[in-house]
Image (tube, rainbow, N blue to C red; front, side, top):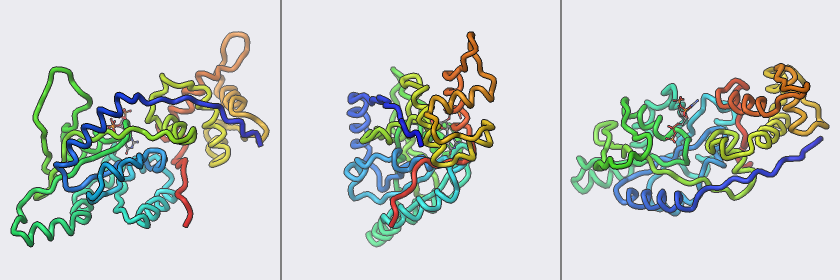
Length: 291
Ligand code: G4P
Protein backbone atom coordinates (compact mmCIF):
# COMPACT_ATOMS: atom_id res chain seq x y z
CA UNK A 1 0.00 0.00 0.00
CA UNK A 2 1.30 3.47 -0.87
CA UNK A 3 1.65 5.33 2.42
CA UNK A 4 3.72 8.31 1.30
CA UNK A 5 2.39 11.01 3.57
CA UNK A 6 3.43 14.57 2.73
CA UNK A 7 5.25 16.74 5.26
CA UNK A 8 3.07 19.64 6.35
CA UNK A 9 4.46 22.60 8.27
CA UNK A 10 2.08 24.07 10.79
CA UNK A 11 2.91 26.89 13.15
CA UNK A 12 1.21 28.51 16.07
CA UNK A 13 2.50 31.88 17.12
CA UNK A 14 4.21 31.98 20.52
CA UNK A 15 2.82 35.48 21.13
CA UNK A 16 -0.75 34.23 20.81
CA UNK A 17 0.03 31.42 23.20
CA UNK A 18 1.43 33.74 25.87
CA UNK A 19 -1.60 36.02 25.66
CA UNK A 20 -4.02 33.10 25.83
CA UNK A 21 -2.20 31.55 28.74
CA UNK A 22 -2.25 34.80 30.72
CA UNK A 23 -5.97 35.16 30.15
CA UNK A 24 -6.63 31.61 31.30
CA UNK A 25 -4.49 32.01 34.41
CA UNK A 26 -6.23 35.26 35.36
CA UNK A 27 -9.68 33.72 35.00
CA UNK A 28 -8.80 30.39 36.58
CA UNK A 29 -8.76 32.04 40.01
CA UNK A 30 -12.37 33.08 39.55
CA UNK A 31 -13.93 29.75 38.65
CA UNK A 32 -14.91 26.60 40.53
CA UNK A 33 -14.76 24.26 37.53
CA UNK A 34 -13.41 24.11 34.01
CA UNK A 35 -15.07 22.57 31.00
CA UNK A 36 -12.76 21.44 28.26
CA UNK A 37 -14.33 21.42 24.81
CA UNK A 38 -12.89 18.85 22.39
CA UNK A 39 -13.68 17.94 18.81
CA UNK A 40 -15.22 14.46 18.97
CA UNK A 41 -13.55 13.58 15.64
CA UNK A 42 -10.06 14.25 17.04
CA UNK A 43 -10.34 14.18 20.85
CA UNK A 44 -6.63 13.66 21.25
CA UNK A 45 -5.31 16.24 18.78
CA UNK A 46 -7.82 18.88 19.93
CA UNK A 47 -6.72 18.47 23.53
CA UNK A 48 -3.91 20.44 25.07
CA UNK A 49 -2.38 18.46 27.94
CA UNK A 50 -1.19 21.76 29.48
CA UNK A 51 -4.72 21.95 30.87
CA UNK A 52 -3.63 19.56 33.62
CA UNK A 53 -1.26 22.22 34.89
CA UNK A 54 -3.49 25.23 34.19
CA UNK A 55 -6.57 23.72 35.83
CA UNK A 56 -4.74 21.90 38.59
CA UNK A 57 -7.11 21.16 41.46
CA UNK A 58 -10.26 22.29 39.65
CA UNK A 59 -13.09 19.88 39.00
CA UNK A 60 -13.26 19.24 35.26
CA UNK A 61 -15.76 18.23 32.61
CA UNK A 62 -14.78 17.06 29.14
CA UNK A 63 -17.25 18.10 26.46
CA UNK A 64 -17.06 16.06 23.26
CA UNK A 65 -18.45 18.55 20.76
CA UNK A 66 -19.25 18.09 17.06
CA UNK A 67 -20.71 14.67 17.78
CA UNK A 68 -22.92 15.23 14.71
CA UNK A 69 -19.80 14.79 12.56
CA UNK A 70 -18.17 11.98 14.54
CA UNK A 71 -18.71 8.23 14.32
CA UNK A 72 -21.14 7.43 17.20
CA UNK A 73 -19.41 4.14 18.06
CA UNK A 74 -16.08 5.94 18.32
CA UNK A 75 -17.61 8.71 20.43
CA UNK A 76 -18.84 6.02 22.83
CA UNK A 77 -15.31 4.59 23.01
CA UNK A 78 -13.86 8.03 23.75
CA UNK A 79 -16.49 8.63 26.43
CA UNK A 80 -15.44 5.42 28.15
CA UNK A 81 -11.78 6.30 27.78
CA UNK A 82 -12.15 9.70 29.46
CA UNK A 83 -14.30 8.18 32.19
CA UNK A 84 -11.58 5.63 32.86
CA UNK A 85 -9.21 8.60 33.20
CA UNK A 86 -11.51 9.89 35.96
CA UNK A 87 -13.09 12.72 33.96
CA UNK A 88 -16.79 13.50 33.59
CA UNK A 89 -17.95 13.58 29.96
CA UNK A 90 -20.73 15.33 28.10
CA UNK A 91 -21.49 14.84 24.40
CA UNK A 92 -22.82 17.75 22.40
CA UNK A 93 -23.52 19.17 19.00
CA UNK A 94 -23.40 22.86 19.79
CA UNK A 95 -24.49 23.80 16.29
CA UNK A 96 -27.92 22.19 16.61
CA UNK A 97 -27.92 22.30 20.41
CA UNK A 98 -28.16 18.54 20.92
CA UNK A 99 -26.88 17.53 24.34
CA UNK A 100 -26.41 21.11 25.54
CA UNK A 101 -29.41 20.93 27.89
CA UNK A 102 -27.57 18.32 29.94
CA UNK A 103 -24.78 20.79 30.66
CA UNK A 104 -26.07 22.31 33.97
CA UNK A 105 -26.73 18.85 35.39
CA UNK A 106 -23.28 17.62 34.35
CA UNK A 107 -21.58 20.65 35.92
CA UNK A 108 -23.51 20.23 39.18
CA UNK A 109 -22.45 16.61 39.26
CA UNK A 110 -18.79 17.56 38.79
CA UNK A 111 -19.14 20.16 41.56
CA UNK A 112 -21.01 17.85 43.91
CA UNK A 113 -18.31 17.92 46.62
CA UNK A 114 -17.81 21.65 46.37
CA UNK A 115 -21.56 22.28 46.64
CA UNK A 116 -21.69 20.06 49.75
CA UNK A 117 -18.69 21.90 51.24
CA UNK A 118 -20.27 25.32 50.66
CA UNK A 119 -23.54 24.13 52.17
CA UNK A 120 -21.72 22.75 55.20
CA UNK A 121 -20.12 26.17 55.73
CA UNK A 122 -23.48 27.91 55.39
CA UNK A 123 -22.42 29.35 52.01
CA UNK A 124 -24.97 27.41 50.01
CA UNK A 125 -26.08 30.50 48.09
CA UNK A 126 -22.61 31.26 46.75
CA UNK A 127 -22.69 31.12 42.94
CA UNK A 128 -20.64 28.36 41.30
CA UNK A 129 -18.67 29.58 38.35
CA UNK A 130 -17.39 27.73 35.33
CA UNK A 131 -15.14 28.50 32.40
CA UNK A 132 -15.20 26.95 28.93
CA UNK A 133 -11.79 26.18 27.50
CA UNK A 134 -10.68 24.83 24.16
CA UNK A 135 -8.47 25.30 21.13
CA UNK A 136 -9.57 27.76 18.42
CA UNK A 137 -12.55 26.81 16.31
CA UNK A 138 -13.64 23.87 18.43
CA UNK A 139 -17.04 25.49 19.01
CA UNK A 140 -16.58 27.41 22.28
CA UNK A 141 -18.56 30.52 21.29
CA UNK A 142 -21.29 28.46 19.68
CA UNK A 143 -21.53 26.35 22.83
CA UNK A 144 -21.64 29.36 25.17
CA UNK A 145 -24.31 31.04 23.04
CA UNK A 146 -26.37 27.84 23.13
CA UNK A 147 -26.07 27.56 26.90
CA UNK A 148 -26.87 31.26 27.31
CA UNK A 149 -29.70 31.01 24.75
CA UNK A 150 -28.46 34.29 23.26
CA UNK A 151 -25.38 35.78 21.68
CA UNK A 152 -23.25 36.10 24.77
CA UNK A 153 -19.80 34.97 23.73
CA UNK A 154 -17.74 37.66 22.09
CA UNK A 155 -16.80 36.52 18.58
CA UNK A 156 -13.38 38.08 18.94
CA UNK A 157 -11.56 40.95 20.52
CA UNK A 158 -12.97 44.24 19.39
CA UNK A 159 -10.36 46.96 19.69
CA UNK A 160 -11.34 49.86 21.85
CA UNK A 161 -14.24 48.02 23.43
CA UNK A 162 -13.55 47.12 27.00
CA UNK A 163 -16.19 45.64 29.16
CA UNK A 164 -16.33 44.08 32.55
CA UNK A 165 -16.31 40.38 33.07
CA UNK A 166 -19.76 39.00 32.47
CA UNK A 167 -21.28 35.93 34.00
CA UNK A 168 -24.11 34.08 32.38
CA UNK A 169 -26.57 32.53 34.75
CA UNK A 170 -27.18 29.01 33.45
CA UNK A 171 -29.07 27.43 36.29
CA UNK A 172 -29.96 28.33 39.86
CA UNK A 173 -26.60 29.22 41.38
CA UNK A 174 -24.52 28.25 38.32
CA UNK A 175 -22.70 30.86 36.27
CA UNK A 176 -20.65 30.63 33.13
CA UNK A 177 -17.90 33.06 32.13
CA UNK A 178 -19.01 34.60 28.83
CA UNK A 179 -15.50 34.66 27.37
CA UNK A 180 -14.00 31.28 26.60
CA UNK A 181 -10.42 30.41 27.42
CA UNK A 182 -8.42 29.80 24.27
CA UNK A 183 -6.05 26.90 24.58
CA UNK A 184 -3.27 26.72 22.04
CA UNK A 185 -2.94 23.58 19.97
CA UNK A 186 -0.13 21.31 21.02
CA UNK A 187 1.69 20.20 17.90
CA UNK A 188 3.80 17.43 19.27
CA UNK A 189 3.68 15.44 16.07
CA UNK A 190 2.87 15.84 12.41
CA UNK A 191 -0.18 13.63 13.01
CA UNK A 192 -1.62 16.09 15.53
CA UNK A 193 -1.10 19.19 13.39
CA UNK A 194 -2.51 17.43 10.38
CA UNK A 195 -5.58 16.16 12.25
CA UNK A 196 -6.29 19.72 13.41
CA UNK A 197 -5.89 21.07 9.90
CA UNK A 198 -8.15 18.40 8.39
CA UNK A 199 -10.88 19.16 10.91
CA UNK A 200 -10.60 22.90 10.30
CA UNK A 201 -9.08 23.99 13.63
CA UNK A 202 -6.28 25.54 11.59
CA UNK A 203 -7.34 27.64 8.67
CA UNK A 204 -6.41 26.23 5.26
CA UNK A 205 -5.07 29.54 3.89
CA UNK A 206 -1.89 29.06 5.94
CA UNK A 207 -1.46 25.53 4.70
CA UNK A 208 -0.58 23.52 1.66
CA UNK A 209 -4.15 22.43 1.01
CA UNK A 210 -3.23 19.93 -1.68
CA UNK A 211 -0.70 18.09 0.50
CA UNK A 212 -3.18 18.11 3.37
CA UNK A 213 -6.00 16.73 1.23
CA UNK A 214 -3.65 14.13 -0.28
CA UNK A 215 -2.78 12.93 3.22
CA UNK A 216 -6.44 12.98 4.18
CA UNK A 217 -7.22 10.73 1.21
CA UNK A 218 -4.64 8.23 2.53
CA UNK A 219 -6.18 8.38 6.00
CA UNK A 220 -9.65 7.88 4.55
CA UNK A 221 -8.52 4.91 2.49
CA UNK A 222 -7.09 3.32 5.64
CA UNK A 223 -9.97 4.25 7.96
CA UNK A 224 -13.11 4.18 5.87
CA UNK A 225 -12.58 3.45 2.16
CA UNK A 226 -16.31 3.08 1.67
CA UNK A 227 -16.66 6.82 2.32
CA UNK A 228 -14.53 7.47 -0.79
CA UNK A 229 -16.48 4.89 -2.77
CA UNK A 230 -19.85 6.30 -1.80
CA UNK A 231 -19.03 9.97 -2.17
CA UNK A 232 -16.59 10.00 -5.09
CA UNK A 233 -17.64 6.82 -6.88
CA UNK A 234 -14.32 5.04 -7.21
CA UNK A 235 -12.45 2.37 -5.31
CA UNK A 236 -9.25 3.80 -3.81
CA UNK A 237 -6.53 1.53 -5.12
CA UNK A 238 -3.89 0.42 -2.64
CA UNK A 239 -0.89 1.38 -4.76
CA UNK A 240 -1.90 4.98 -5.41
CA UNK A 241 -0.56 7.96 -3.51
CA UNK A 242 -2.77 10.71 -2.09
CA UNK A 243 -2.44 12.99 -5.12
CA UNK A 244 -3.43 10.16 -7.44
CA UNK A 245 -6.50 9.51 -5.33
CA UNK A 246 -7.35 13.22 -5.49
CA UNK A 247 -6.95 13.05 -9.28
CA UNK A 248 -9.31 10.06 -9.42
CA UNK A 249 -11.89 12.02 -7.45
CA UNK A 250 -11.40 15.10 -9.66
CA UNK A 251 -11.91 12.92 -12.72
CA UNK A 252 -15.21 11.60 -11.34
CA UNK A 253 -16.31 15.13 -10.54
CA UNK A 254 -15.27 16.41 -13.94
CA UNK A 255 -12.87 18.98 -12.43
CA UNK A 256 -10.64 19.83 -15.38
CA UNK A 257 -8.15 22.59 -16.08
CA UNK A 258 -6.89 23.60 -19.51
CA UNK A 259 -4.73 21.01 -21.22
CA UNK A 260 -6.85 18.12 -20.01
CA UNK A 261 -5.27 18.02 -16.53
CA UNK A 262 -7.39 17.31 -13.51
CA UNK A 263 -7.92 20.19 -11.11
CA UNK A 264 -6.39 18.70 -7.98
CA UNK A 265 -6.35 22.00 -6.16
CA UNK A 266 -10.09 22.40 -6.51
CA UNK A 267 -10.65 18.78 -5.53
CA UNK A 268 -8.51 19.27 -2.42
CA UNK A 269 -10.68 22.16 -1.25
CA UNK A 270 -13.87 20.28 -2.07
CA UNK A 271 -12.73 17.18 -0.17
CA UNK A 272 -11.89 19.12 3.00
CA UNK A 273 -15.10 21.18 2.82
CA UNK A 274 -17.21 18.10 2.31
CA UNK A 275 -15.63 16.50 5.36
CA UNK A 276 -16.35 19.64 7.43
CA UNK A 277 -19.94 19.58 6.27
CA UNK A 278 -20.36 15.90 7.13
CA UNK A 279 -20.96 14.91 3.50
CA UNK A 280 -18.50 12.03 3.71
CA UNK A 281 -20.40 10.59 6.64
CA UNK A 282 -19.54 10.67 10.32
CA UNK A 283 -15.83 9.98 10.50
CA UNK A 284 -13.65 10.05 13.61
CA UNK A 285 -9.95 10.27 12.83
CA UNK A 286 -8.51 9.06 16.14
CA UNK A 287 -9.15 6.03 18.31
CA UNK A 288 -8.60 6.10 22.08
CA UNK A 289 -5.69 4.13 23.51
CA UNK A 290 -6.65 0.54 24.27
CA UNK A 291 -6.92 -0.71 27.82
P1 G4P B 1 -14.55 28.84 18.80
O1 G4P B 1 -15.34 29.83 19.60
O2 G4P B 1 -14.09 27.68 19.63
O3 G4P B 1 -13.42 29.44 18.05
O4 G4P B 1 -15.51 28.18 17.71
P2 G4P B 1 -16.92 28.70 17.14
O5 G4P B 1 -17.96 28.63 18.20
O6 G4P B 1 -16.70 30.01 16.46
O7 G4P B 1 -17.26 27.56 16.08
C1 G4P B 1 -16.46 27.32 14.94
C2 G4P B 1 -17.30 26.69 13.86
O8 G4P B 1 -17.73 25.39 14.31
C3 G4P B 1 -18.57 27.43 13.52
O9 G4P B 1 -18.79 27.23 12.14
C4 G4P B 1 -19.64 26.70 14.30
O10 G4P B 1 -20.93 26.83 13.73
C5 G4P B 1 -19.13 25.28 14.17
N1 G4P B 1 -19.59 24.38 15.24
C6 G4P B 1 -19.53 24.58 16.58
N2 G4P B 1 -20.01 23.51 17.24
C7 G4P B 1 -20.39 22.61 16.29
C8 G4P B 1 -20.96 21.29 16.34
O11 G4P B 1 -21.20 20.70 17.41
N3 G4P B 1 -21.20 20.69 15.14
C9 G4P B 1 -20.92 21.29 13.94
N4 G4P B 1 -21.20 20.61 12.83
N5 G4P B 1 -20.38 22.51 13.87
C10 G4P B 1 -20.11 23.16 15.01
P3 G4P B 1 -18.54 28.32 11.05
O12 G4P B 1 -18.53 27.65 9.75
O13 G4P B 1 -17.34 29.14 11.43
O14 G4P B 1 -19.76 29.23 11.18
P4 G4P B 1 -21.30 28.86 10.91
O15 G4P B 1 -21.55 29.43 9.58
O16 G4P B 1 -21.47 27.38 10.95
O17 G4P B 1 -22.00 29.53 12.03
